[in-house]
Length: 533
Image (cartoon, rainbow, N blue to C red; front, top):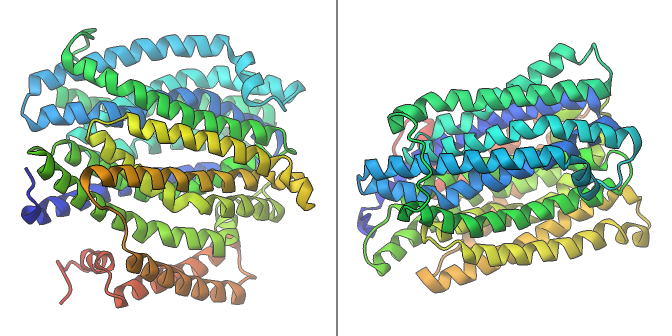
């Protein structure tokens, strides 16, 4: 057991693992941003762009339902617990049984998805008609097998994470992004948008196979082969399945919320679906880099905590509070940067070819709406991981259902009737979707924290810590905005470098002067010192 008084070394190790996760996610997200920039260059906010972004959501539902989040919550706590108890034979058996169940289930769902595609399009994009709808159907049918492969990639990630092989599991998506980038570069100038979208879909499927391929050899070494079986009656397998069902439903209702957003966006003018996807790519960057990295690193460690109820609660409380501080230290300045310098960021990533300055302002508005719930959604990930470590998957489910209901009601009102009532162009209803989702995220986060505090004791971020972060971020924004004003005539990429570099330096300097431990630790790692005097 990691006693409170001996937590320094484990926390240092956990931060190192979080860094590896963040580094892997950073590389994959950078590759994703490059992919989206190349995509925007060839497609802009066109009908073909709307069709591809909408089509990608449907098979992506399969990946999200059976993928990383669900397996992390249901499989890793059981598998990591067996590894902690040195029961390698049982852990191998569980891994093989879960792989077999996933392979069978996803194969059936991929087949059903391909056959039911026209009906799925009517559900997800009822605003699409004619050639746009037909293209979306063709794209979905191509993309579905790739999504099935990515489910197996998520199983590989669960094995790798449990063995603390974080970097490989989170850099593997780079090869998927590279496959799509190469496809666009190779065929983009030779084909019109509609056929190019179909070629890109095939490139995505090839990339999915390559993503699994780079992980599988290491996984096979860790498991000493692939012990496939259908031993679903084993107690540990049944535990995984029992944990899987509530998380599956929880992920399902979250995905339903995302699909409702896409449905509402499809009812808005051309470009709304693509613009929402562009903004979500940027919005999810800090969520993945900081929320997912800390949560992924902490879940195996939390799941391996043993001892009495009070001892486990103390370990979880200390780890949770430390993780919350790490997340907020990076996410809060991301919120301010998206608000103050969002147009600079969007232009640097996307402005090229068919993606114009008007598109930049449109995506910035949607991105600004997303910042409402950015901090809540990232902190909420770590709270959910703590519940999963306690083998409680039902409490997060209840709150996720409530969030989805609230998001749906607020989202419809803010996206459809509210813009005309305020005299705003209908296309800006997409920003209403992101704002309503943010409000709902805060409600869910508050409920998660309150319920967990009753179980393990007080957790959360001190008010003075948050005040120091806000002050530092606002000072940094003032500096970045000033630079932006004086160098506005430069190209988007140069302007982004000139504005964001001082933003980061000022924020880091301010937090360091205010004595925040996270800034001091970052400074120590950057300059090879264990701690500052």
